[in-house]
Image 1 (tube, rainbow, N blue to C red):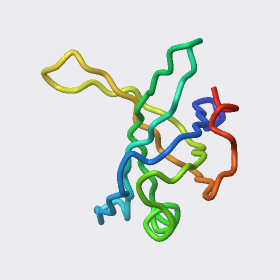
Image 2 (tube, rainbow, N blue to C red):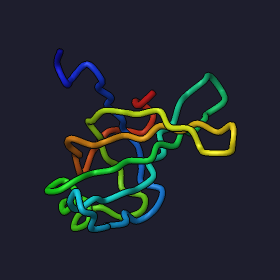
Image 3 (cartoon, helix red, strand yellow):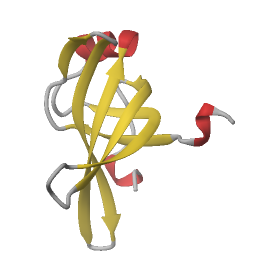
Image 4 (cartoon, rainbow, N blue to C red):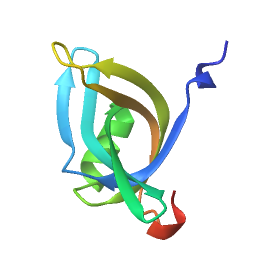
Length: 108
């Protein structure tokens, strides 16, 4: 079975500066990604927690900051918040495209 069966591609803006952390498994950069969804007259925003590891993490740290528009290629994992009914999506980034020049209205 291919590792690419669980694949997600997102275009959005960073909700804050990435946070870099050293772990026993390696270096990880974490950030929130805001993805706009057009629903007729009503625009909605979905938030995703993104983790980038190793070399991708170092690129994120050097090149990205709050408000930057990026495209994220990766896999996702649904996680529940312990003790709460909340659920969120965590994306493990395999690759991140920087300096994306896609008009905001063309992304849906």
